[in-house]
Image 1 (tube, rainbow, N blue to C red):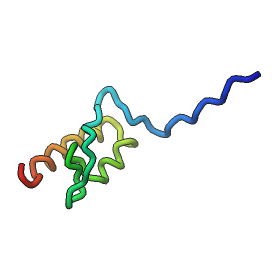
Image 2 (image 1 turned 90 degrees about the horizontal axis):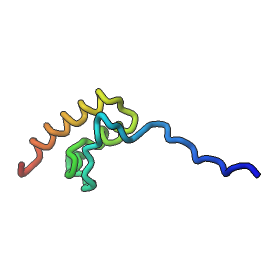
Image 3 (image 1 turned 90 degrees about the vertical axis):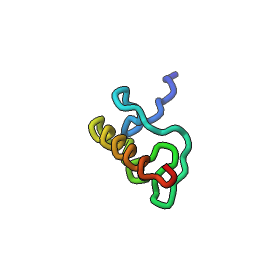
Image 4 (image 1 turned 30 degrees about the vertical axis):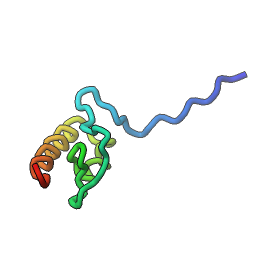
Length: 73
């Protein structure tokens, strides 16, 4: 009897030891389509899975800026 088939591998890794995800599990978008938890724009959230470490660092930097621009900050 042969071993059970392995599940397919994901196309991209969502985990990088060099650049951890800024997600804190508070996933709600404001009127600018920016997450209230991690302050990433929805397009950056979508891009995260396929981004290399350099791009992920850039996304995190942009999220800091968006967080500072958030209403009530």
